[in-house]
Length: 309
Image 1 (cartoon, rainbow, N blue to C red):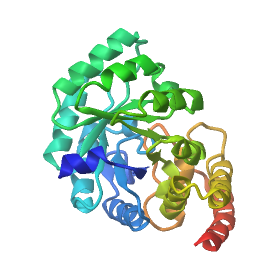
Image 2: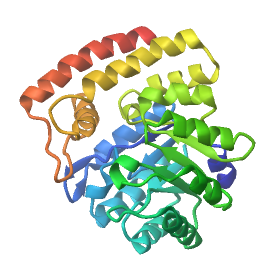
Image 3: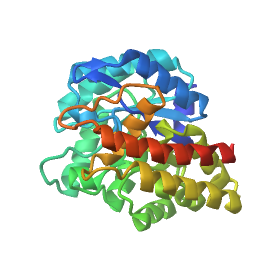
Image 4: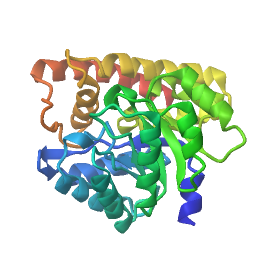
């Protein structure tokens, strides 16, 4: 039953933020709050330890605590996916085993970062990784952070493995995504897109949904947009899409650092009294002026959100 559930996954998977009190301590109540918030909002799954979860800044004790605590809170209400990306295949395999022990449904892995790999090396890496783990695996294409694309032909070959069941694409490359969808139109393989600004478009093209950071804040909005795209309700898609773009343009762009998206999501959740706004080292929290700007912009967006409910 569990395998069937994960291999038919569609909709909005929320890449959950990691609520922290400090760099070594989870915000346990905040984790409960945010999980209940997104499940109530109708998400189809929860993805722990992704980019939005600040995974690569977290030590392994915190990662393990997050997996154990979050899976207990979720209690099988929705599938849980766990990011296991690392430069060491052994560390990825150990984290995958821990995720399996505590009832996760699948794992997600980028290519190993730091060194520039060739595609043949990447093929060998994923084949070796999947041979050592129990759970099914989603590929995670994140070239801006790991310096390598999982190329089209590489995805085709890896998809032949029965335990590699899908791909999350965060490249923002619509042509790449569309080419993959065309190649897999008669094959059982799942495709999710990371950038929320293009989620509806990819669903209209045949994609399975989005792994969208904004769903931490406004899960109902992204679920409604996904369903509108799935049902080809173009008028509703236009209306909801404009709100998604407004969120992207206003809440993710405060300050000068590329971490503004992460800070925007986490600080907004803090302003909603859902969880702490503590950022993992080396990130800094918004200062008072930035929080005031965020609060003003959130107020306008919240007013528009009430209009679409």
